[in-house]
Amino acid sequence: MNLLIGGVRAPSAVANFRASAPSTNQVRFNWDSTPGATTYQLLTASATPASLSAGVAAVLGAGATEYIDTLTPNTFS
View 1 (spheres, rainbow, N blue to C red):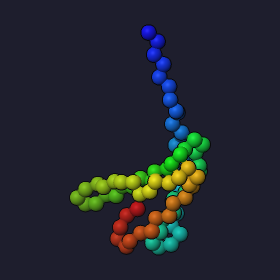
View 2 (cartoon, rainbow, N blue to C red):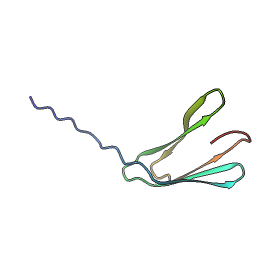
View 3 (cartoon, one colour):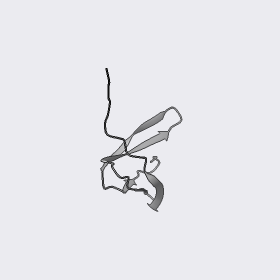
């Protein structure tokens, strides 16, 4: 018996991921688009004294190359 398993190959990781602060309450994330990507998930993690929390900050479409996070004072991005 021959068994062939095939499927779509996952796109590579984004390149040139970077962050900047355009203002005192914003963080801008930029990256180069990745051929074959259909969505981008921007994941966050913040350490607090008692725990580590993580989550999905945003799910962006295939053409996205930027996300701006507006912060509340005394929080993390």
